[in-house]
Figure (tube, rainbow, N blue to C red):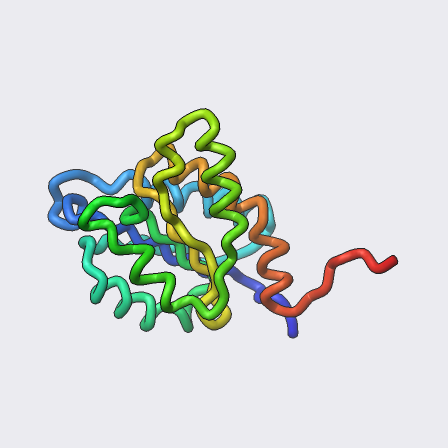
Length: 170
């Protein structure tokens, strides 16, 4: 199987208030900026789109079902906490065909050592069919920290997803 020649990325911001226009989505554009930088440095092409949804499980599930065939990576921001409207993890996790727990566990531990509130994030990472899916916090700072760590693994993750063995054989 060949690697994709482009990486199309969908960013979904989940926020009742941003959806209603009560405040401007800041985490989605910041994630987009980091993704654009990654594509540029990697020499890859691809489209990056942002959609803002309310904290609504049905709308999120519907958008994911429609979008998975068209995107290599989907990143959600928001809804990973423990509040009553935080529905992202419960919606995404059952849709995953494979979960990749290590990246989120690492991020929580790394940032939680300095900022214990980081340990309250319940974000998940995994695959739906051939699409990588990451659920990250909605705070701009936390989303940036998550993206910094996630992007370090994307090249290798894509290679593994497409069956390319880059491990050294001894």
